[in-house]
Length: 193
Length: 193
DNA sequence: TCAATTTGTGAATTTCAGTTCACTTTTTTT
DNA sequence: AAAAAAAGTGAACTGAAATTCACAAATTGA
Image (cartoon, rainbow over all chains, first blue to last red; front, side, top):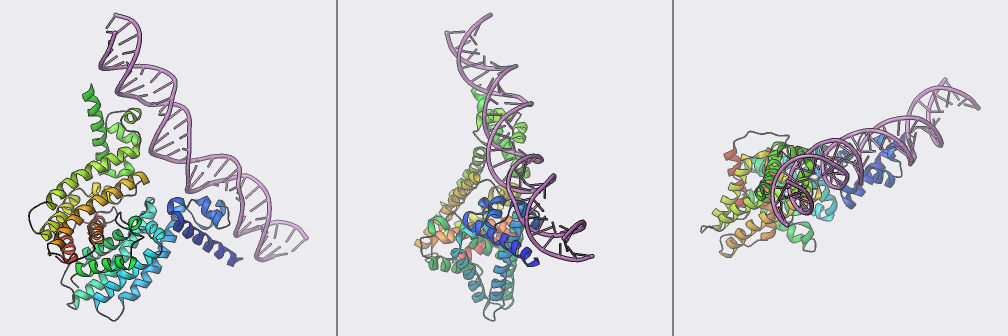
């Protein structure tokens, strides 16, 4: 029984994620999500207090996963520039593998509560890059610089290149490896690595 | 009479902009805008077919103005790196002078029709930077690179670095000149200038 | 087994800003 | 000056989706 409860919760989260991957947050109405999870809307509200909180959990789960991967890269015992390049490339590669979801998480218009969560997530990403940058600056590998601003720039650079106007729609036919490389090069040169 | 009509239209646009600068698109409800312009909502609808189209015009007007300034810089007869740095710094400086408006225009969640306009605007910005980049690449000042990707990265870098400090959550009163310089340096190095 | 509690239901309610429209006031035309 | 046209009004309408809730079904435990 207890198991079923946890199961339901999980199914709701999964269904939401699926629906978002399919048509963005826009298409993930409570009724549609509930139906996809095989439950009624009323039941969904037994598990989540509001649509916004459901969305926030879906977002933060995905981001936590991502942060885990990036943190592992940031902690490797290699040159800072290599870690930076690897982290950027890793993120971009995964985003390109699931562009709809990436767009929804990064750039789709959402209501303020979810947007607030998104901002917190961006900050988390920024922190990972800041860590790498500071390490590189300390070791003399990178020139002294404002690592807060630079980290924000890095996050902005690859997200825009991914989901921006010049990014996805026109670009998805193009060589992904080349895009990854272009972004990596851009970010690496930008910090003087 | 004809004059009054044009005047009214102008007043509506101004009132909208003012309201957006004040509380974002969120707070720029039709009724509030109409009241601020000294008109009724019904009258507003004699001048604009929908709220979205009104917002789009407010946005594109501001962006057209901005593009004009950036284009002038892009066309100057100096080194590409200097033009690039000047364009970035110019944009950032103005955004920091009116952070609320900048946030609304750049990052605030808006409905899809306005978001589409925003994407077109970002593309315009990207094109200006692409022009500078290509010129620099042709002249040998910058190394060969994917100018589409790099332009997107530049736009993303400074917008993110702006929205971080600008965003409603972190109302940071940091040294502006330093932030401008950090972003400029980042972008310049990134393209190998 | 029979209450008590928890979980599930989905139609009805709520909300709320954008939009409309029947009407009034102002301007133009004849 | 009267009729026609245009502009102005704001209360009422609308629609769409989130949320609720009175009730049903299932589970627990005594």
